[in-house]
Length: 164
Image (cartoon, rainbow, N blue to C red; front, side, top):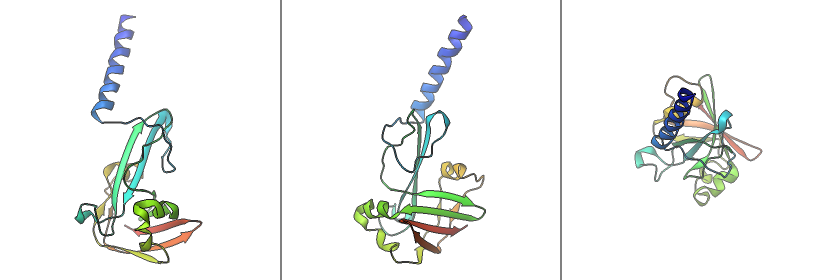
C-alpha cells in the first residue's frame, strides 16, 4: 500500500513539475482552430502575416506561432496572430484562413493581399516550428520557399496551396 501511495505522489509531482517547466497553460475560452485530442490536449496554430526577416513586425510574409496545453475543455487562449488551418498532403501544404479572421486581424490590413487575388508572393524562406511539423505528420522540416503561390476563395475561406 505504501508503494502505491508513493508511486501516485511521485507521478503527481512529476506531472505538475513538467507542466510548470514547459509552461503549459490551462484556458477556458474556445477557438475554432483548436485541435481536439484525447485527455484535453489542445494545439493552436496562428499566423502573423509579416516578414520573418523584419522580426514579424511589418511587410507581408508568414510567421507561425504554435501553442499547446492541457485542459478539460481543450481550449487555447487568444494570442497575437491570425488563426489558420494547415494540412499536409504529399508535397503540398494547404493553408486555409477565414475572410472574417483576415478582416479582424490588424484592422483588415492583410486582407488586401488576398481579396480578388489569384496568387500571393512570399519573399522569405519560412520554416514551420517543429511542433507544427510533427502535428502535420512530417518527420522532416517543412520549409516554405520564396515564390508565388495560388490563392482561391470559396465559402468565406481563402485557401493557399504551397508546393514544398
